[in-house]
Amino acid sequence: MEEIKQKNWFQKNWIWAVPVGGCGCGCLLIILFFIFGVGATLFGISKMFDDAIPVKYATELAFKNSNVIENIGDSIEKEGIPSGIISLADGDGEIDFSISIKGTKGAATIIVKGIKVNGEWVYEDLYVLIKESQEQINLLEEVVESF
Image (cartoon, rainbow, N blue to C red):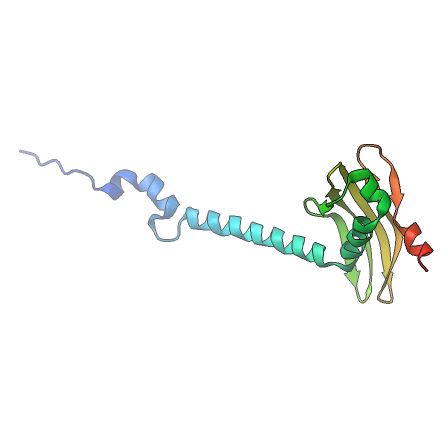
């Protein structure tokens, strides 16, 4: 008589067990490292953008501007991650980005363009674009008037 030897669990399931982690460091671990790595990178970039002086300056001006408050309401907050560029090298640089904001009555976008010369930011464009009416509120006018 012939003996029939049954396959063990690993012999039956090796096709999916090895890639998922059968050898202790399979694809599942690699996928998790990738997901957490990308998440950490995006968080770091977002935090770097939020901590940039031009971002803080632009949002502060927009949040305090009476025309902006009149158009999109109070309780204004940033929405999402700023998009654009901030380029710095040896104390000089340039910026060109937008920040989505929303209030109780609507939404808008802060547009910021400028250059950094000898450590000082000079803003070429700094305005809020109201989404509903497409009205542009120049934030630089109030800064000039306050001097």
